Image (cartoon, rainbow, N blue to C red; front, side):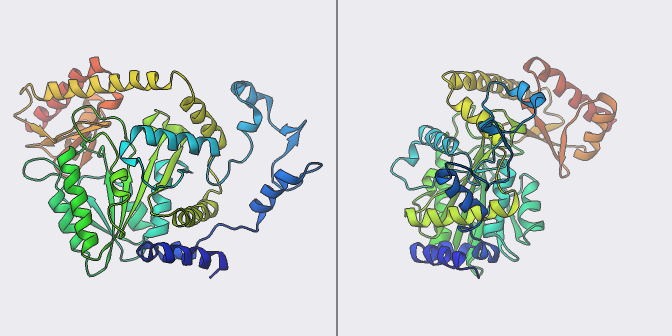
Amino acid sequence: MHPLASQLNETIQRENPHFFDMLSELGRLIYFPKEGILSQSAEAKSKAKKYNATIGIALENGQPMHLKSIQDTLSAYAPKDLYEYAPPAGKPELRAAWRKKMLEEHPSLENKTFSNPIVTNALTHGLSVVADLYAGPGDSVIIPDKNWENYELTFSIRRGAEMVYYPLYNDEMTFNAEGLKDAILAQKEKGKAIVVLNFPNNPTGYTPGQKEAEEILKALKAGAEAGINIVAVTDDAYFSLFFEDSLQESLFGALCDLHPRILPIKVDGATKEEYVWGFRVGFITYGGKSDALLAALEQKTLGMIRATISSGPHPSQTFILHALNSPTFNQEKQEKFEIMKRRANRVKQLLDSGKFDDVWTYYPFNSGYFMCLKLKNVDAETLRTHLLEKYGVGTIALGKTDLRIAFSCIEEEDIDELFSLIYQGVLDLQG
């Protein structure tokens, strides 16, 4: 094992041995090189006043070399904020701005100890880094039965972990905290569990209320008190899109000091929050009790980023930073939020009218991009293909009964027609 990896492991083990036990084999081996090209280049950048012949970029006239055909379309930005490599941890100003945003949006983070956000190449990359660091063959990853299909690829196919499912909703059609608790306690023999909490949920668009959130925290704490080390990952991809009286914060803040056996990891990003899907800017943030512990976890994370993508794209980080610093940013976001809320409300109003009750019900939703129909008499995949071929309507089939509708991409005035066509498709299949 490399000495730097050993030093990081010793720090983590000293500060919280449970956190060390959670690391995968790869997580224990990884480190961020202190004496390689990056560190020597960083030293040269501050000291090489005459000539700096270290980093692998080209310079011309004192700035990064670039093509006019590209720069002409980006003339609002200086070449230094576009073409140079971003640091592996991300643009420092962006990390500081995102942390400030987190504190403003999460009162529960006040007086909590948590790391500076580390920039990832959007949410999927962030989850992949978490999987590399903490998941390995035989580890259990606990997610609800209604989930984003990429979790299986990220944790199971790539890392060999075992997926453990529990029903998202209980009999009262609220969050099934008891099912989550049972799934966690079932891992007692293994002594470790990775729990992914995704709110608003993809595919259902459901976010728990405050009472449900308290039950979730109790479930996690019960597992920790039973001696299970828990990697608690909050996938906050759709954060802030809360349209009703649900939880308005990520659970990350409440997790930060819940129990020594619970490692809180927040994975979020600008992708959906700021409507910049193609920019691919996300973040990983750790909760922990000491700066030394958080610094060691950051170094492990940077090692994983260095070993995979080296660093995230600089231009999109610059664009996001510019937006966050804009005096009209909050107003612009609120305008888009209101559009999304009106779409969600129209969907719910239409479904509650009773006109479709003979062919489907729907799962509770109150946030995010999506909602799910529960079909009564037809197969979801059969309906999906029929809608596509006969009416040119695209939906997502999930299992035998569930059909996911992304109201986020449907104009409010088109929602009625969309559901009428889906309804007609069901009638066609029923004959």
